[in-house]
Amino acid sequence: EVQLVQSGAEVKKPGESLRISCKTSGYTFTNYWITWVRQMPGKGLEWMGFIYPGDSDARYSPSFQGQVTFSADKSISAAYLQWSSLKASDTAVYYCARLRTDIRGGFDFWGQGTLVTVSS
Amino acid sequence: QSALTQPASVSGSPGQSITISCIGTSSDIGAYNYVSWYQHHPGKAPKLMIYEVNNRPSGVSNRFSGSKSGNTASLTISGLQAEDEADYYCTSYISSSAVVFGGGTKLTVL
Image (cartoon, rainbow over all chains, first blue to last red; front, side):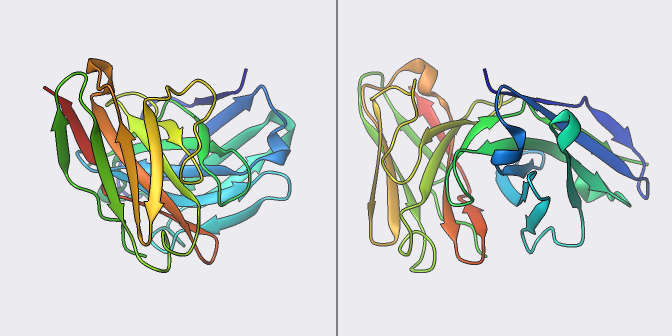
């Protein structure tokens, strides 16, 4: 059974760093792209970018380029989303999802979401 | 890239059919047959309902169907049920290895 399990909710202060995780199981981690999606409070879903765990090839939405970093650890089948300096506007729920084929395909399995709250 | 345009809300009574539109451009929906639709119940993980315009993943009810004409994609839900009440989002692949979401549509089952 394919599963993506995300790390728990985080409360951080502006300027702090953060890494959230997406641990996968039930499939060959290195063969499928992982995407990250943001949902700000009361807003819709926004595509942040993809990473291919096989070679860590990462593609970022222009809106998120330079603001976040994707990474993957093949040894434990986990993907990560990282910030070096959080802002209040990063407050959102973040989802990871698996792409069903290549980067043109749909996102077929999703994590449960990680709520990140950034507040002084 | 600009978000795809969806109606903010649609509604229907149980048993009826509804259609949600997703308007793009010749650079996204009009250029590729890579439109997907997602159902999102608040507080839950989104669920893939349609991929590549009109394909249903295993386990998705055949009451859900997708189509595309020109720069507009559509999701139709027939035989509306209470559990269909949710937010629905379309996505399209666009060039330069990117994806764009629609703004989302809140479906209310009356």
